[in-house]
Image 1 (cartoon, rainbow, N blue to C red):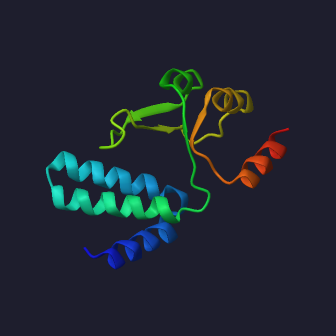
Image 2: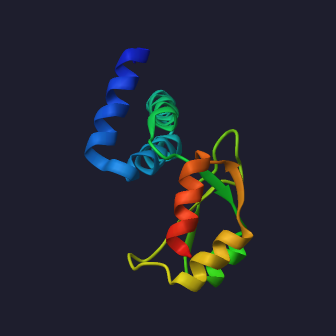
Length: 127
């Protein structure tokens, strides 16, 4: 798939899936890797990379699995070539209680921080 097609597919996936698009692309890539379909896996990794570049508000933090599980969140392995210890963290669909959100925030370390104005806005909302 050409770069223009990758970008177009990433844009359409973002429009259809919203903030879940990045996770969906990563899951598809992982699924194709497990099936041994290297070409499709590579295509989905390229789509995932394109989404990382165009996702509004994309940010990445690191925290221990232990903290996530202590906050009653699910954790599933999702190793990436550049991050073998990568995992996806999810809730059961309910909002995360405020105390648990603060606990996660206190133990998190920014890997890819959002713009400073977004951090300031988020802090004002939680005060």
